[in-house]
Image 1: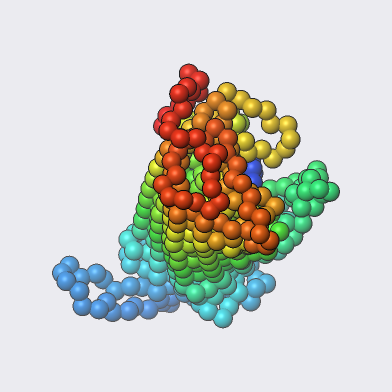
Image 2: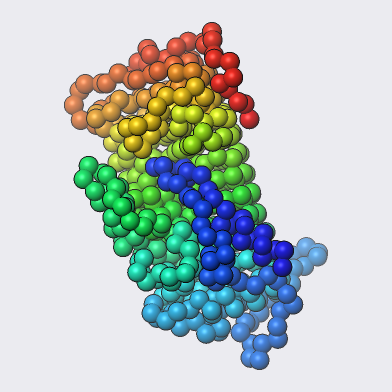
Amino acid sequence: MSQFYLLAFAIFCPFFLSSTEGRFHGLSNFRTLFTAFQISLPPAPAPQAASPSYYTISSSPSPSPSPGPSRIFNVQSFGAVGDGIADDTQAFKMAWDTSCQTDSSILVVPAGYVFMIQPTIFTGPCKSDLVFQIDGTIMPPDGPESWPKRMNKRQWLVFYKINGMSMQGGGLIDGRGEKWWNLPCKPHKGKNLTTLPGPCDSPVAIRFFMTSNLTVQGLKARNSPQFHFRFDYCHDVHVEMLTIKSPALSPNTDGIHIENTNNVRIYNSAISNGDDCVSIGAGCYNVDIRNITCGPGHGISIGSLGVRNSGACVSNITVADSVVKNSDNGVRIKTWQGGYGSVSKVGFHNIHMDNVRNPIMIDQYYCLTRNCSNQTSAIYVSDVSYTNIKGTYDTRSPPMHLACSDSVPCTNIILSDIELLPRQGQFVANPFCWNAYGEIETLTIPPVSCLSEGTPLFMAQGTIDPC
């Protein structure tokens, strides 16, 4: 029973601003949401099925000790219809519970079918080597009006406290987000991108919470109401060969968001959406991102961090060998005034920009309104290197924007092999720097004369709270 209370507290506790365009995640009603959600059972001895719902595959020879045979559990064997209309939630829950309780199991969502699933939490811990094989299509109820009245509108499918799972396949996760995007509260619905009153909660499509040794690969995801994939309090995560698509004006539809998560590899994926392709929130370290094709969208971002005077520590982040195209930003660090903590040991290497409005950006004045005032404290940004960043930029903004806090300068910003030319015309805009210190290792195009050399002589005492 204590595990259920931990689950409820962990998943429905308040969240600070998510990394991208300033979304807030407030408190939800604990008792209502806990009783309303479909929550799968924790492991227990697997029941004996009246008729077999699985078959076995013999393992290939391997060194001793040899693994046992894999058991295949097809959701249709548990009653899933797969016509896109019937509610297949209970069949998925039963298939999950049985797979979770069985060693070396494979839960199969077969190709050629469309399964509609209500908001559900799939709980662990599970026995070893669980594979969630998605070859068909899964989708939620169609929009806010179809969402179950008593269920949480901030998340759809949650995977909680699982160690050693692989979610894979060639199937599709269809978020059916259009009706959520058209809520009057969304930024693009009011005049001049203003919001209108009304309910605004929208679900994350796939969320992993307190999960470890996780692989997500090969899947396609589209049109999530909000983030497509989110990882909270996870470690040892490998994401590869994902294809994520939503319209360029779909609000808050980050492709992959990580928060309080470490030892992450995100490789060989294509993401186009209405927000950050990949966003890195507070508490993340040891993150390696490579061979990403990003855009249209808002680029690859660290942040936003420090909202409502909160702390954030982010370190050891690498983004390399990637392409950003037709996007509002390229590689960006964004923090709010008044936060504390640090962003350090960040490398952006071998990145091609194609018609990107802000290819290189540090914005320590991030704000969603015009009413944000400067504050004394700020997140300390240091040891950030940009190497071999080349391509074209949209001339509405300068190719480099390094706007650091008045009281807490950015330090050790390293620029090498930078070549950014205007997409149209001959005029090359000057970079913008404010209170940014570092070193230019090679000639850059355009020249960056605004970057101060060395280290600042003075920092206001008490303004830096190192992690």
